[in-house]
Image (cartoon, rainbow, N blue to C red; front, side, top):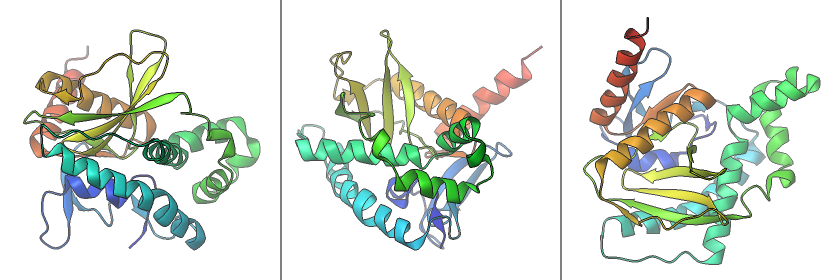
Length: 249
């Protein structure tokens, strides 16, 4: 079993569709634009991508701690009337997970190599190890962002991109940052000075479709690898993009 480059098993597991011959998810492959089925142990992974010490740190200190919070939120998402109040420590742990998830991404590698001649000579796995070993400069990235939970009460599930996080432009000069943690629940980070009252529960399927369109756009910009989730919603995304492509002059 390889190391998951950016999207860990804890985020893929809630999107599992089948368990025959291992837990699997359906995903839209950006290489050939076909919908496929893949094992969560293998999808988005590479053998020995991280050094053993770094892999252990990510599993125990980053993914392990946030995984407990996400598990509680997923339980709440199944009970419409339930309320869940994040603690200050919960919010800090989630922000930390966002930061490390972004630092593990290809977008950060591309930008680092674009601005550093030295970085251009390093393999991705070596460069990402240097970045993750020196994350201090990124720790204040979401310091002024509030951590919010959105529960999806429609029949259409959230899709999750391999980059894990995507953005939503607001009417103000700021962005919301979204991370789906299950088909029925997502984390929304919003800057404190721009945050407006957002309903905790989403009952409008068009909003979920918009979120999923943004998940596709974010993946297409950052990784161009895959988005995973419900087959019908993946097919909607695929059909829409094909139609847009074939209609170009």
